[in-house]
Length: 160
Image (cartoon, rainbow, N blue to C red; front, side, top):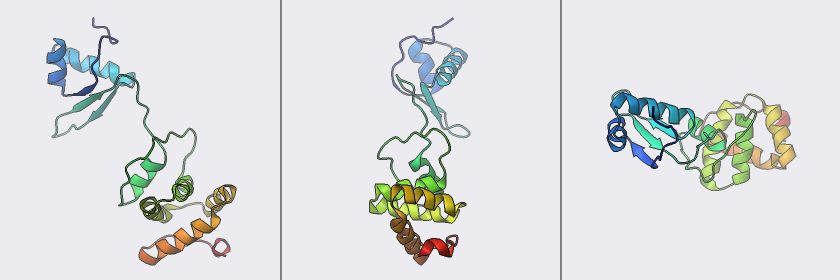
């Protein structure tokens, strides 16, 4: 049996290349990659008609679940993460709008404005905005977004 913690070189591999570099059979290589994946040392991309590519890291990589993931999911303007944002607990679209306004550069604001289409809880958004002191910026971004796309209507009591 192979030791899962054997010397692992960081990089991108196909199953065949991984197996040949370690002198393993194809099935043994798949099993080893699976064990490394469970430990968080491997990320997999591809599959289907494409070859699977296994990106191997020396240290475990946590999946980000924060601002950039939400913005890139809902906005046609994709952002390259400026930092890795990890969140524990419930991180909603309302939280992402607040973070986008606080980051404040023009591309981020443009991408954040698309999130107004998906706001479910305006009260939560404005409670968070009040805590951070950015209510005016939220209203301004909302009015700007209404100018060039359809967004959910904000209740009147928040527009003043």
